[in-house]
Image (cartoon, rainbow, N blue to C red; front, top):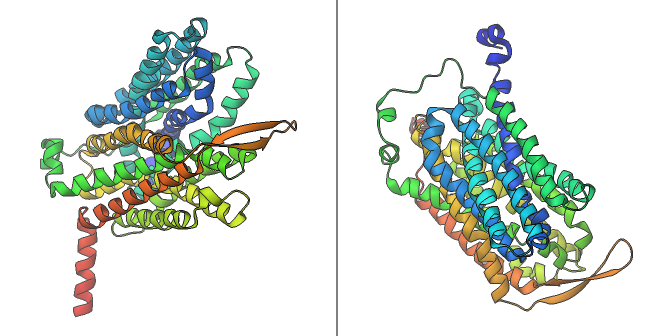
Length: 459
């Protein structure tokens, strides 16, 4: 323990001032991924189709990326202001969503209710998501300078684990709150998450000895810093981040139906929880692993190569179409689902550290925010691409599912459509790998290590 830490106690403790507030913020906003748990209930309650309400989630991810891109400079200058904005917007957006669900229940089919949900869950919560996601990242990297990947992975893992933690709680609330439980749940959770995020906001603090650099790097605009390297380098990072999210969302959005297609409808909840754990584990594991590498871009190469291999195996075996009743094919499909979740999470956690290795810490929040715009656009394209493919290709078919009470439920699935989604994702993974190999340059640290190794060999 350092002398400063001994003197300052909790006020200078990196876990109290960085890790815990990051987890409080990310475990709150990460519950945005619980949308699939209650989207059908919302649709039924307000009198709209599920596809109409799904846009609320797409808007939330889009505005997450856009608010991160446009408010990155606010986060850079004042993490207390940005974390407070995050707490207020997320809580107000969630409470507002609850109100408009209530209104929609009283006025079935009301466009005002649907638009209100879009604005509250999509726009207002989206701003809270973007600022809340960014606020603790730079602070973590400053406190954990020797293990930046581990630190950011820990926080971002909280974002991924939020779904696994909150899902059973939300399902219990929906069952226990009775009539109107869907809107009551939103209003109650708005208060709970505001308290969590506000505590995180109060605790979050940069190290005492840190002063924003006043060098040329700081005086330059964000675009000038990006142009300090070939512009294609940043374009490559943005594109491979965007494509990895698009592929992840395309498969994750169809995950439950694929599981049902394999004859595992009774295990959907368990498998979804396991996949959420892989998502969180990928965020922590891949980022910690990258700390040991000379060039963090290597971790993306591994993610894309393994994603191509696993996707290719399921395509060649027709795993989704032929998987029902075949244990080996079921294992292969589940392995693909789990790894895509892990790679999806790992792609998130390594972005800020990869950017800091390339462009330094001076403008990292702003550059990271701009890069998160890729998440926003992927939120609009990933789910929608998969839904279009499933609707366009193959033929829906009915399969039987025996419920716990012995009654039989008929489930509509489209095995061919889900299989075709994999053709699109493997093509995008291959494109991502090519971008990773040829557009994203090695970091200065990696080049120095390579030169030193070469000199050692020649000596």
